[in-house]
Amino acid sequence: MKNEFVKTKNVKHFLTGIANLSTRGAQEACLMIVDGQPGLGKTSTVNWWAVRNECIYLRAKKEWTPQWMMRDLITALNAVPLYSFEKMYKQALELLAQFTNANSISGKNFAIVVDEADHIARSSRCLETLRDLSDYLEIPFILVGMGIIRNSLKRFPQIASRIGQYVEFKELDLEDTRLLVNTLCNVQVEDKLIAFIHKVTNGYSREIKEAIASIDRFAARNPGLELVTYDSMIGLPLMNDRRNSNPIYVRG
Image (cartoon, rainbow, N blue to C red):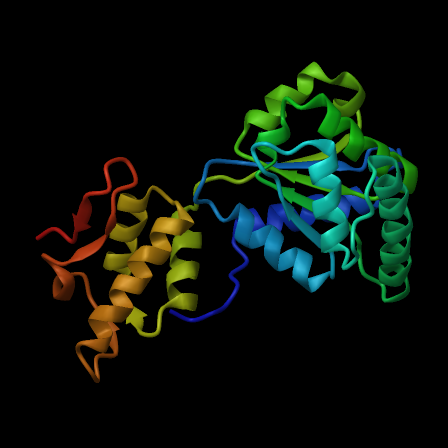
């Protein structure tokens, strides 16, 4: 499978949300929520964007406290965390100001991505700490989760009121499935097989990539094959069913 990033409609919606956030009217409204079911490409998208824009990517932990979160943030900013929370907070502000200025000079957007943010969706202390940092420097924070955080933030109106953009990742349509297969697969794939992939994966990019890997393995076992057809793979496993982990075969 080719190592390329594919701009599906979900990715384009995310980029639109980023663009809208950068032109927001209320400067304090610099929180962004990205949610959707697992396997739709949220993490790969925010990782790709963070790397391209030299932004900070954090993965929230289930047992995160404000102190632990601050240590992870400062470490991601390439510094050694100080000892007390107060000192770490001041240290983070100084480092974030430096990163923001550096990105501004290079014409790039600076933001902090917090993936798996559902882990802190009910932690008022962690959320308030992020809000304080965001308010002080007007740095966008992108909180990525699976839907829990969107509903949980309703309990914290002082935080919810600062959300400038919501982006929901949805199941890929047939057009996006075709784009993913044609871009990532090492061989050409018959449209009938692509349609079957779209049907059995329900548009989840994670499973579509599993199917692409299976097609590539099949092609590698058949040197010189330029087009993989539906009929050529009948009876072969394509991917696993996310509901029960059983293999899904190309049906005859």
